[in-house]
Length: 100
Image 1: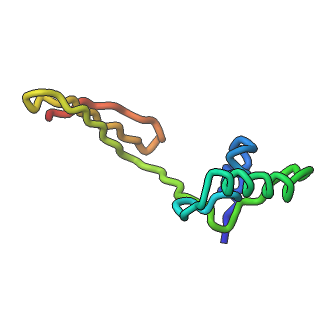
Image 2: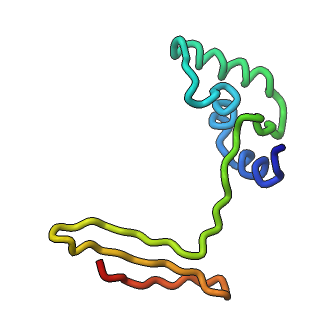
């Protein structure tokens, strides 16, 4: 079952991306580029004149709301750069440098 958040996000995507989502079952085999382009044209005709293109059943994702993230940039001699970003109770983010 698709949620309202998925439809809201899908609707922000460019028209070509929305049609592409209908035309392409990602990672399935295609016989040719022409097959993909034909599917896009079929989707364009199917949704012509519609203000809102519905989210395909096979389309989706995850909404992540992290409270901590760490970024690491490798450098020579193990002297890497590391940063931690943490969200406080007030929703504000803080950044700290961590030892490698």
